[in-house]
Amino acid sequence: MKTVSYHYDVQKIKTGIVHIGVGNFHRAHQQFYTHKILESEDQQEWGICGICLLPSDEKIVKNLKAQNLEYSLTVCGRDGNDEVYKIGSLRELIWGVEDPEAVIEKLADASVKIITLTITEGGYNLDKETGAFILDDENIQYDLKTSGTPSTVFGFVTEGLRRRKLKNNGGITVLSCDNLQHNGNTAKKAFTTFIEARDKELAEWVKANVTFPNSMVDRITPAVTPEDVQRLNEKSGLKDLAPVYCEDFAQWVIEDDFIAGRPSWERAGVEFTDDVTAFENMKLSLLNASHTLLSYPSFLMGYRKVDQAMEDQNVVKFIRNFMDTDITPLVPAPENTDLEDYKKTLIERFSNHSVSDQVSRLCFDGMSKFPVYIIPNLSIMIKAGMDLTRTAFLIASYRHYLKYKTDDQGHSYEIGEPWLTAEDQKLIDDEDPVAFLSVSALKGTDLKTSAAFVDLFVRFVRQIKNEGTGPVLLSILK
Image (cartoon, rainbow, N blue to C red; front, side, top):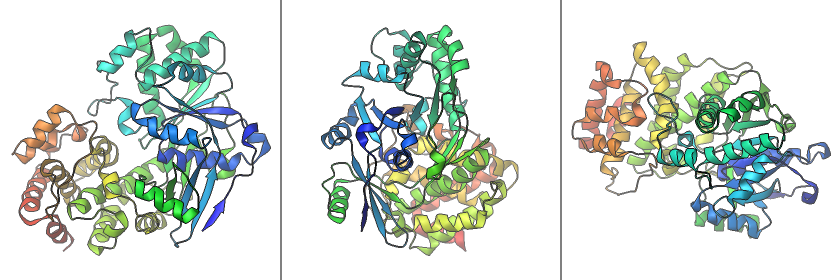
């Protein structure tokens, strides 16, 4: 295994970026790209200050601080050859629970030109049916009224921008790195709605001084278990308290709209464009939607690792049929992109034994994923009279996964649905399968109005319960 150390003096790196949400994906993606450009002396004002806002972040904060914010990233090759990178681009780390004032001051700092975000698909606090920012949320209401410490990312950023304005510290870019359609537009709606409700004068300043470019991000990055920590350190020979691992594929496409300047990330492979729509549509509709399609049926069939599921040719055929028949007609390929090659590469990436991603990670937070990855294209498919077999089977599998919490082998499991509401739970518990079609994850379209979809869905619900997920999948492929 090859280990690659950084070749820049971390003491000379200045902070130009604040990132909120220092999770595994951020450390495998944005930190990696930034780490690569810091080798150039003219880029060394673009170090990153990480900001963690949740009580649950305490462990990662302590572990990273214990090793001077450095960590190892293992890039797992599809050919079985892995590389380990020592990452030094994270130069500061602030835990908002411990020092909220330091968070606000850093956001207001004149040397900071970009705020980046990985706060998850559900973190933007938008109604899944209307797309509106949920102003009556309890925590949002607290932050709108308090003169003290904020409790949400919206409260912290707003206070940081308010001080920035007061100090005449200049404009700034807010760059979402979450898997959302038009993630910059989403971030703009969420933050500007909050700011307008909190401080109308500040809202006017934001219109002229803050930009929200859209971006498309892509790199499969599994969760890291304690067993993974031991495994990764044994391979690397390091004693890293916070290692990360990921696949060898990475892509980042960003609309070039940075009001206060930006790093030369293109030197590390980032593609800048005027419009990211075609790229994000391709990625969300093919990679993310296929991950969701794979997740619940595979988990119910007993698979716990993605590469193991991909050894089942029925699963592979199911995914390829979805890509080729359901999605390809709806996805125009971006310029200079071969869609067939892209789909072939996706199958290779899912099958990467060295990554061996967790199926449970793909199942996590379906309530936020379905509205982004599945529902937009499903709405088009229904209107166009297309084949709804695979999507109806997926949603029937999702209901079974949430309702029964037992797989085909009789193994029980816990679900991870942080945005599941009490109303959602009532609809899941309802013995009438059609009630499930009103859960918040599916409200982007009224599935109950499509007789063709309802018939397929109800049939699959009953078949999965009576026969098991695997046999029903096989019947779809015949």
